[in-house]
Image (cartoon, rainbow, N blue to C red; front, side, top):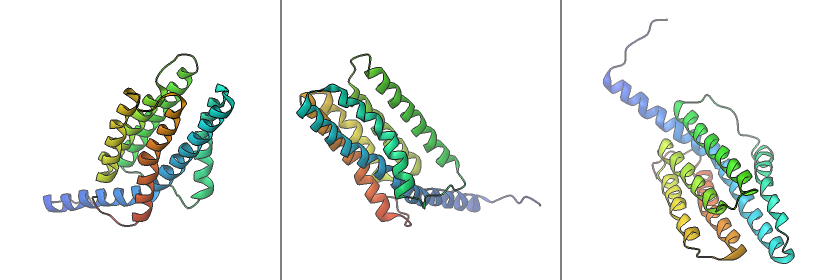
Length: 196
């Protein structure tokens, strides 16, 4: 098969089409993780807060370890139509971003069992960075904006806007804005491509 050189106009059209395809695939495929992991975190935040408030037993914090399990099985049960597609460079880059963010969150979670660290701040910062980078890589402005808002929301934790265990509810509220709202936007738009 003979390779044909593309002229400048054809190259730009091909690149534009690849970006549009990546955005469309991103919208279709990634609404599910945003919704599943977002809702799992929001619901678990309320559950852990309630259990800590009523029992004063800090062992309930181990429930946070359920999020990856609920997220994984939630994706399989609620979104079985998700399929593996050929991955572009952007798809792989987004995958790498979330692999690093996930590994860091897991590492901070384990560290928090032994050392007192601002874990809510750390997780929100990592998630905000992950969402913002995802938005930038996929060229979806709404995802980028939400990610930046997530990063900025860490100031709520730095300045202790909420005190005591009520910070868990703040954490859940931030995740609602950071994951659930964009998940619903992506889910509602799936199939359509726009630069919003």
